[in-house]
Image 1 (spheres, rainbow, N blue to C red):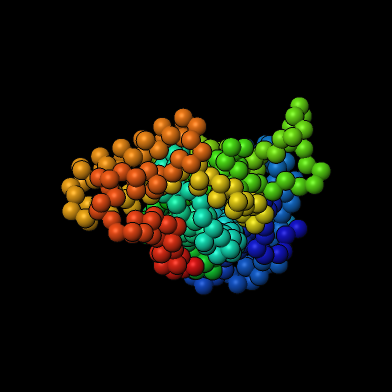
Image 2: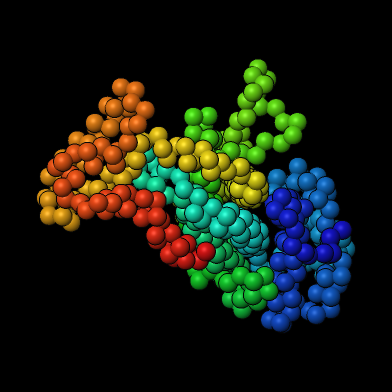
Length: 437
C-alpha cells in the first residue's frame, strides 16, 4: 500500500511505482476539489482518502486483461476502497488528465536534480579554473598553434558554458511545469476549471491555458532538446580533454586509479575512457531529442503514438544526463594537469604565436596591413625552414629582429617586450570577472 509522497532520486522518479504514487495523489486531489465544488460528499471523500491504495503487481495483473494502464490502476484502487464511495474516484477525468499532469511532476522533479547537478559541476570547474588562472598553454585553431591562453581561461569558458546549461534547465523547468485537468478534448465540459487550478496549484504546477486531451508535445520536445544540448556541451569538453591527453600533447589527463588497466593487449596504456564514454552518451541524448520532436505531431485532439516513445526516452535521458553530470564532475575534480608539458608545447612553434602582435605593431608604425603581413609571414616561413633544416636556435622573434625591414621600425627591446606572455595575459583577471569567477 502507498501512503507516502516524498522527493526521490532520479532513477526512482521514473519507476512505475513512483508514477502510480503521483497518479494516486492527483486522483485524491481531484476528489478533494470536487468536495469543494459540492459534487462529492465529504463523507465519501473521507472514506476514499483513508482507504485508497494500490499494489503495483496487482495493477500489472489487471492490465494484462484490461490492456489499459489507467483503468487497471483505478480498478485496483477501487478494490481497496471497497465502498460505494469509490464511484467518485476518477470522476470526470480522462486518462491523460492524470498521465500528463503526473508527467509534469516527474519532469520538474527531474530538472530539480539536474539543476543541483549543474551547480555542483560548476563549483568544481570554478575551483580548478582559479587554480590554473595563469597556467600558460598554447591556444589552438584548426588544431594548430595559434596564440597563448591559460588553462584557467579554458576552464572559465567551460564554467560559462555550463552557466548557460543551468539557465536552460531553469527555463525548461518553468516551461514544463504545466498540468491539465480539462477532459477528453480539453473543453472542461465535465469539471470546472477551478478543479484544474486546485490540483495544479497543489502540485506546484500551472494549468495549461488551453489543451486538447493532452498537453501539447512541443513543450516536451523542448525539454528533450534542453537535455540534448547540455549533453552536447558535455561532449564538447570531453573532446577537448581527450585531445589534451594525446601522447604527443599530454597537457591534461584523466585520472588513472591504482590497479586500473588501460588495455588488454598493451599494459602501458592510460586511455581517456570516461571522456570517451561521455562523448558516446551525448549521442544517445541527441537521438532521444529527435524522437521527442517526432512526438509533436499528433492526430487531431490526441493519439497515443507519443506515449510508447516517452516511456523510454524520458526516463533514459533524465537518468543518463544525471549520470553524465556525475561523471564530468568527477573527471574535472580529478583531472591531472601538466603545466610543464604546456610550457614545452608553447615552445614548439618557436614563438610564432607572436605573429599577430608583430603584425599590429608594424601597422601602428605606419605600414599598410598588406606590407606588414608580408613582412611577418616572410619571417615566419624562414623560421619554419630553419627548424626543418635542423637549426637548434630557430626563433621567430630573433628572425624578425634580424630582418632590417622589420628591425628599423622598433627601438631596442620594444618588440621583445610586446612579444611576451604578460602581453597576452593582461586581461585574464578581467575575463574571469566577466563570468563571475
